[in-house]
Length: 115
Image: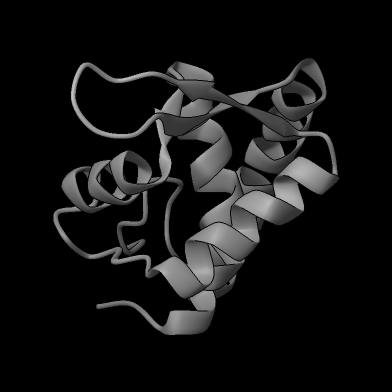
């Protein structure tokens, strides 16, 4: 598992990316993060919902209720145009950050050690 602060710091970027691909509800976001990360990212409700609320307050995402055949309606989240712009900015920022860290560590672009 990764350092909790590293995961927490990248949660918004990861959520925006997933919601850029398709609308999802909270539990679905958690499961998709776990699946794609090989269970390295395990985001708890105490991290997920405050992050979603913050993104909503910043108008990067919005929600709607979707009726289900069985059970109660689900709260789905979707990315807004402002969220798509922020995703592009944050993705570039992340790539630049990783590039600089790799330079300091003496690694090539893809994280392999330079010889």
